[in-house]
Length: 356
Image: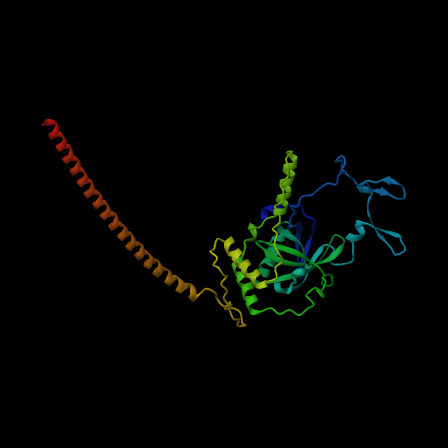
């Protein structure tokens, strides 16, 4: 991680103000986007669509070097603002990340999280104070709250340790986070204990996941489409969505979800999802009645008995059939012998008459 960061271009140079300690640092992006970007084209001939920048007073195209910043006043007047004006702002955070407090990490609302950066020690003089701040954050199990100025405005940040480096998360100001009022259901809904138990069972069955195993399937699908069209082939088609009726029974939906989750993990799913109340919950919940318990056992006991009786009857019948077959065979043999004797007697009598 650290090796990769060293080759990333810094986007801001300054220092961390830690009381009277100053730590020279470079600010680099901690994240990168892998999303696929598209160009705008003319659909009729595929030509690129480009935007040109014109000065409305001179009615001519201008270069990037001729473009600056300006603030539009209420009466429409444009007040030019230069980079020098912004770099010499009379605030301590213009070139300094000023730490103002240390708080437990759970004090930070995730809704406030914004862009993430790495703070890289700038030069040999920064090594000792940088390491001191990193180890102090580790031992305190806290994060540092800081103020800094970036891209034309003052921002709030949170410093924490990531590996052997210090990372900073940009934070939204508290008044930039909207309250979730009016978003929850406005009707009274009663959730039964059995439904909560099934939801717990589903959560346990789904289990945890290694975030390293997750990937952007949408980007991969777009790449396949691009590769197919570049090769002159038809792009892959999306599978037809499963058609199903509206689920009205929440309990059935939860049971089916638990069963499907177990099957996807290679576990054998019984006829009904087994639900047990979790012991760690403080409120006692009655587990749903198990279906197919003792009855299945008694059925299992009766089945071998029936099979044994049927086997005995089958054996008896086969024995009787064998006896009948044997007696028929004996009778046939005796009849054949008798017939043979009579035939021999007739032949001997006939031969005697011819000789006389």
